[in-house]
Amino acid sequence: MCARAADGVAICWGGAITDTPETRFRAVGVGASHACGIVDDDGSVTCWGGGPEDPWLAPPTGRFIAVTAGFNHSCGLDDGGHAVCWGGGPAVEDVADGVFVALDAGSHQTCGLTAEGAVRCWGLDSETGASATGP
Image 1: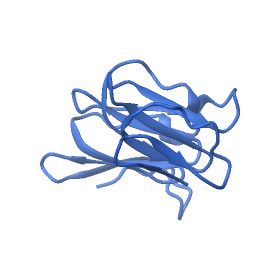
Image 2 (image 1 turned 180 degrees about the vertical axis):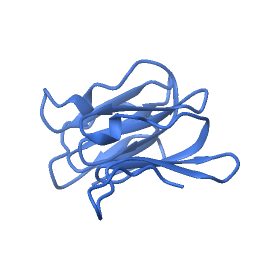
Image 3 (image 1 turned 60 degrees about the vertical axis):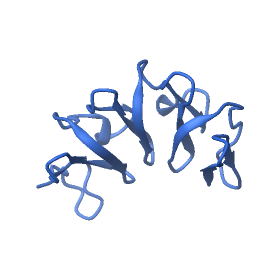
């Protein structure tokens, strides 16, 4: 478990998420064994937890306005509102195109909300094992 304190510092306890960075974050997303945060100073993303070779600990460069984390992947909204995902599994493949105002990751899928109120999902549907393409 992790949370963002009022001063922007991430606090993690219990479980596999350790070595919390000593920096201030705008937002924090927590997955199964890792967390990612948007650095307050520059909008970049940093991730921690898991093992040193885990691909979900290597976010892309750039500025982000939102971040979320799933089982073995993470996604963020870049400063243009486009979804960018990293890590492993089906949720990093075939990321939906378009501009989003919010993202939320599940275990092996992520969904984005458009400004028009539509929801678009990608990754693996945890109920059926089918591709989650959303409405």
